[in-house]
Image (cartoon, rainbow, N blue to C red):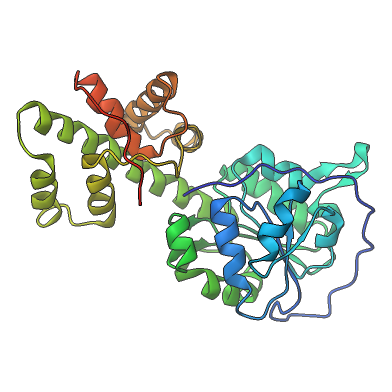
Length: 331
């Protein structure tokens, strides 16, 4: 659920495409683009499986940190072009489009132009469905594979290989990526051949969590104003009617006022807007998500942009007129 650094390819020579040698399991080099908190944890988990992981970064000062994790960092975007699979974990549509499509007029080809035929772009970013469909088409017309595989989980889950992966793409391409999925997560849900469906599921899932956080924040605020211990309330609810992971994990964080940066508010707002656009296209109202959008805008306007989405609880407390102390850092 967390996103990573925005990147754009630098000027690189064009690679000569090679013909595929037929169906095969991906065994060659793995490229990785988007090495923020989530991406770095994920890339590092591919190393113990014996894969050579080429990690693209824009700034040379990041290279030593990545090398200590067993990755092979590079500032040359063209080093990715001979990889069997290139994984992207980027924050938004614009960053991903830049990496895939590049800027031919500036001599900076993207993955679509540079990857060899038969290679796979494994997109694990949370993006819009139109962008997923467009990029899949761009790769397809060049004989490359495109698999969408956004994840549910945070950087701690990524480090522990406990991500839930939602995968969609051509069956052969998904199968070739399965060993990578096994190194990254605890379970993979294959949802069909249309990559955009994986991204739609991720967006809708994020909306369910966001509305849960909003409601948790509201009920905790009521409990506090009425003099009730909110931890007692959360413990009762998560032991009875609301025993899901989101209620247990985030309810506790909201009670503790633990808003340490993770899935920060601007990125959540981006996902909310994408989900609302999907709903509008479908002619299906999402009024509860409208409320979450407005709460996020309020939180950002109040200076909470660098806090986790659990800070929806902070906004609810402020709206209730509560004296809220400084956020508690997670240990």
